[in-house]
Length: 165
Image 1 (cartoon, one colour):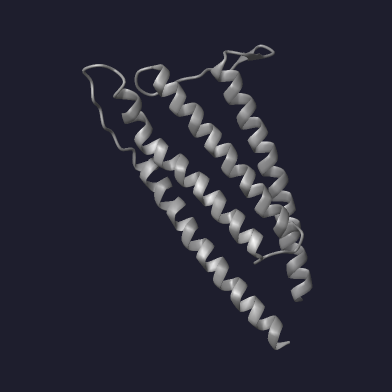
Image 2 (cartoon, rainbow, N blue to C red; image 1 turned 45 degrees about the vertical axis):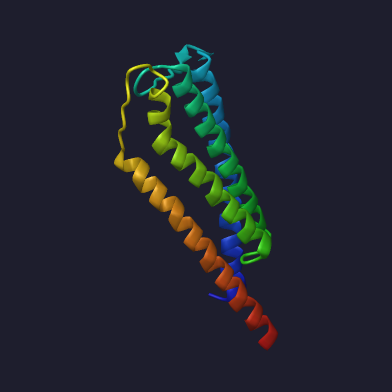
C-alpha cells in the first residue's frame, strides 16, 4: 500500500469519525436537555437521574460536566477536520488536540470532585466517594497530554524529513 493511499485512508477515516462525533454530540445534547427538563420524544420520556441527593448544586455540577464534554467534543471535531484535510501533524492539530485534552481534564476533575462539592452544600453531611471509573478517566485524560507531546515530536520529525527531501 502506497503512502498516498494510506494517507487517503486516514483522511477518510477522520472525516467519518468527525461526522460520527457531530451526530453523537447532537444526540447527547438532545437527550440531556430532554431528560433535564422532562421533555418527551413521542411516547418515550427521557428520565434524569442523579446519584446522591438531588440538590441544585448536584444538577449544576452535572450541567457543567455536560457543557465541558460538549466543548471537548467540539475541539475533537476541529482536530478531525484538520486531519481529514491532510494536516496530520500541524501546529493547529496539536493545539486543538491539547485543547480537547484540557476540556476533558476539566470535566474529569469536576466528575471526580463535583459530587463531594455538591454534597457539601447539604448541611451536616460530608461524603467523599471515589469511583474507579472517574480515576481511570482522569488517567486516560492525562495520557492524552502525553499523546499531544508525541504529536509535537512527530511534527518535528515530519519537518526534518521534508527538509531532507
